Amino acid sequence: MERKKVLEITDLNIFFDISLGTVKAVENVSFNLYEGESLGLVGESGCGKTTTALSTMGMLPDNGYLDNGSILYEDKDIAKNSETDWQLYRWNDISMVFQGAMNALNPVKKISFQIAEAILLHNPGMKDDDVRARIVELFKVVGLDEKRVDDYPHEFSGGMRQRVMIAMALACDPKVLIADEPTTALDVMVQAQIIDLINELRGKMHMSMMIITHDLSIISETCDRIAVMYAGNIVEIGSVRSVIKESKHPYTQKLIAAFPNIYGKKTLIESIPGSPPNLLEPPSGCRFHLRCDKAMDVCKREVPVPIDFGNGHFAACHLLGGHHE
Ligand SMILES: Nc1ncnc2c1ncn2[C@@H]1O[C@H](COP(=O)(O)OP(=O)(O)OP(=O)(O)O)[C@@H](O)[C@H]1O
Ligand SMILES: [Mg+2]
Image (cartoon, rainbow, N blue to C red):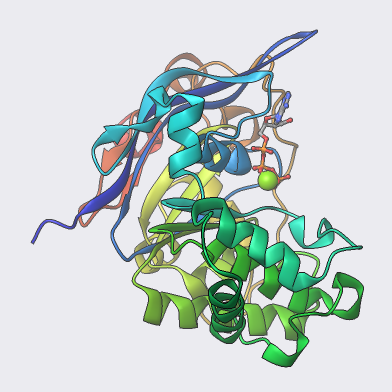
């Protein structure tokens, strides 16, 4: 049976104009998000994860723009949304827990007030009692003690504040929830609790989720599929199991080697030599070729096209396309 697409992103380019030129932050990115699935977006710092996510919320920074591509949400191209369209759609249809936002709660407002604002955004006429009931309900959903709704942010631990951020993102019952680095900056025990919460929400809310992280092990615990980004491109995508167990792209293989223990096997930690390229002038051909120990001549010249390995597993690398030199 054909799975229903909630988001269909095709040939997306997102650029930023800065005084030095144009940063090509995201290029030729295509992927779908299916109903009820959880998709992980992984890659090194600066590879374009947050930028890709912000484009689906209509929240790119002022100097950022779509140079090309479409973002279909339930078959409508939201890349063409006016600001009024975005206001109707944002938080209601797609919602996001921003990277680092748990530290941006307003310190002088009660948690209940801040969640109420999120609820009232799309339910402006809701009665006080109903708002209160909804806050309590959201507290329960994210595993917070309802007696503490009137606390201030400083009275909450990091993990509890992250739960508040998730509650706010769920306030309008979105169809898609994006969580950008939801466990970064939390200690390991609290990370595990947030991962449990994400998995609980997956089970009971029937939402689609996008989990953004640089940590592969978090994706393997919370996602059905995984998209690996390198320097603004998706280099490999597929089910978590096939991408991790049968990774095709040299970058994915290096990324996995850098995270031991994913399936219990202990290996020596290897870091990936070199650093991500400057996106003002991305490398020609395959953007990974400068750091790839298997690079061939063709890798410098031609952008590799994704190759289909079946069951939705794709990887874009010349080595896989029968090129031998
Ligand atoms: N407003 C901006 N102006 C110019 N360049 C930007 C802007 N925002 C992001 N970029 C650049 O776009 C690229 C992608 O950034 P993005 O924040 O999406 O990466 P990321 O994968 O989320 O990284 P991280 O893991 O550090 O959060 C980076 O090279 C970044 O420097
Ligand atoms: Mg980011």
